[in-house]
Length: 390
Ligand code: DAH
Image (cartoon, rainbow, N blue to C red):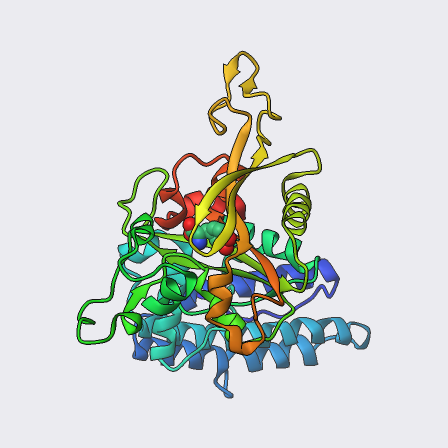
């Protein structure tokens, strides 16, 4: 039977609650039955028409008929009813105007809310009663997190952060770093060249930088010594992807130039940085190596922070350090005087200044630190993998 307003005899809180609930239930059923503009008009008039609408009746019968002592309480209920009726009338209009939500949208909460919102906007309404769309906060990517942590270790030592372009010239990536044209050392970095550059002189040809070292030259061109910089960034090489290689990866470079910088400064700085980063119990070991832009050059190892340097994990062998107890972390050395020659005019006279440089792979450090066994997981964008750092 259709709802009609009846006189109140009992003005107690419980009775008012009951009467309101009965009204709300009728309101809800009637609103849900609205399917067309004609239905909606009938619905609106039945509830809101000045003459004989349910709302004015409530006002007349409930509020005006209430004894003095109950007026306040009844007034509050009537206000709430008025609000709900207005909402229901506006809501019913939106509902019959928007298409029914198709099954495809019914699955996930977000897509349904967004779908509804789109439809509401089309209909010229914004339903402020809908719950908000909660956007996931996200988390720092483990490689970026590793880079930030390593960079901040050096920032605490007074280093500033520098960066440079990922698309680089042959000059900065190779020539000014003492890789002469056609020198076999270039073969150690399988380079991705930008096509169609043959018309230019070799030093101007573009390529994807194979390391962050070119930023050493770019920074020395613009900043006079003394300098202390770290350079986090993306680099590319023509390496086919596998569990430990990716054609795109990340490096953190460092450069310190001043008067009287020695190999002792290099060792002391890097030893301190590794203890900060991996924990104070790690040791460092420097072994001779070759890079065209440093002389002498070294590879730096840290004692394995997984097995504590023993090469064993219980009765098993330690895989990350291949049982050696040491993990290679970076290349380093004293800046070759030939490199300073390229920036001599900006105060880098190799007879007056000296410096050290280092470069490390951030992805490999992140793999070790987080115990991930496939570098591809970092870059194939699977949110289920990345969420583990959220
Ligand atoms: N750029 C070198 C590479 O990608 C790493 C490196 C070695 C950087 C020694 C340096 C350095 O600054 O001094 O293989």
